[in-house]
Amino acid sequence: MIANAPLAWLVLVGAGSPAVLFALLGAASLLNRPLPERWTGRLAGTSMMIAIGALVTALVVYGTTGGGTRLLSYGEWSASHDGGIAIEFLVDRLSLIFASLTAAIAGVVAAFSNRYLHREPGYNRYFVLLAMFVTGMLLVALAGNVEVLFIGWELVGLSSALLVAFFHERPAPASNALRVFAVYRISDAAMLSAAVLLRHVAGTDSLALLFSGVRVLSTIGLTETSATAIAVLLIVAVACKSALLPFSSWLPRAMEGPTPSSAVYYGSLSIHAGCFLLLRSAPLLEHSMTARILAGTLGLATAIFAGLTTRVQTDVKSSLAYASLTQVGLIVVEIAIGWYTIAFVHLCGHACFRLLQFLSAPNVLHDLHGIENTMGDWRSGARAHRRVFLFAIERGFLDGILDRAVVLPFTRLARRLTALDRWLCDVVIPARTPTLAEGGDGQDE
Image (cartoon, rainbow, N blue to C red; front, side, top):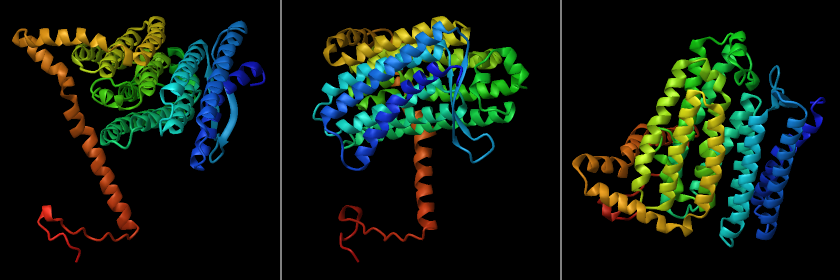
């Protein structure tokens, strides 16, 4: 860290500014003393501006002091075992550009949200979750070891589910947030399994080796079989986080949150987090042809499915969400082929473009006329066209499949664990007296 002191401090300030905002707003909310809107808006804007300035300056310093990958270590936050859990950031051109883009997009969304959510009861709660999200995204972008990556991955997923349930006074947002959370548990389990397997095979949790070239991976004892296993687990984690098939049905349900959160999550940043992780782990994919074929197949299938589905949606946000998913599928295909520069430029350009579309969605309702005309053409077409239309309007029938395969087992397990917890704690719950509608007399015994 001494040799890279200016760069290390700039990166720390850039990643730490949203974290400080999250801690400050979160502590005020926990103490039931939320800050006034004026202060919250100014603090959010200032924090994002500091992050943008620090990360852009870090990118300039990195470019002027020579290239190459640099691992910045800031000590350990745990010493419960040998080596502890270190705070490490892996800095190169790719990570700094994506981190700067993340901070810039978050700054735009924060400024937009300040007016959009004016006098909204959940104003402060929204900015707490937004700060949590930005902190998680910057950790994902700059992570130098598995622990930092996993914490960032968790912060992004948790804030996403909580923002889907932002309007929790209505049943639909809470129910849809549960679906999102259930799918994200699969992503987290796959990510954690990949981390454990990497530690077992390579004997290290450093991502500098995982994101290095194929030759370096061979020197640490990573065979094609182990590389395939780790890569497949990462692809599963990415598929859940980026709504690739067969986990695409939660995406339109996530539109229940405020428009600014939909813009930053499912239009620009969160949905691209998986693509960025695949791009970073490209050397691992090159080590396994099976993983590349799997990623390319999922990306192509998702692009075709989302391209059909977006043409028949009846609301702007769902249409834009599936349009974003189409491009995400194509980005994954580009990564699988090996077009890394094209994929990264595609990712950055698409993130900015979808951000603009989502933020202006309330003013572009007239765009649906073209979609409605397309729907009319498909309804009046041949039988094959009608079948394609039915497949698209039902979103590939993935909703029912996801219910039976993921959501229902998840909720049943949660109920059983709750019952087990009550039994272990020896909590006796009195039996409920049947109501008149259920055949009882409606009176307590």
